[in-house]
Image (cartoon, rainbow, N blue to C red; front, side, top):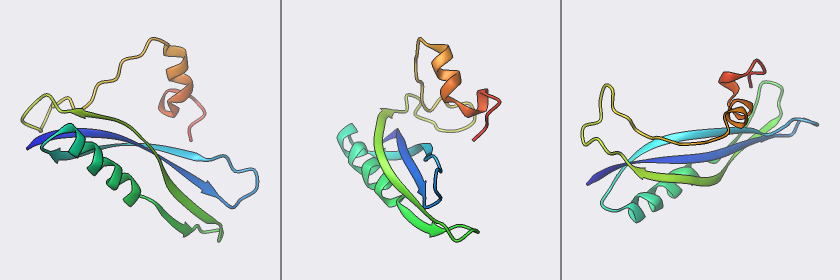
Length: 108
């Protein structure tokens, strides 16, 4: 068995008027024999994240699985302290900072 990391994209919508969707990117570890099996398991995991509930204001919040972004094998056979799980490369740092709420003053 091999260890893979899957990048899943989910979105939350609310009944509240004018409320923008909230997106969540999740990194999930999976074990599988092949990348195809890992992709299948990742997709099933993403679908399992779908849920609906009422928030403290009584508004319906619905989380939906939007996309399986990527599946990659974890290169290090031993997952533990210091293991690199996933690497993503990009060229446009300004676009990355606009996208990543932890790098902006806007927050969520």
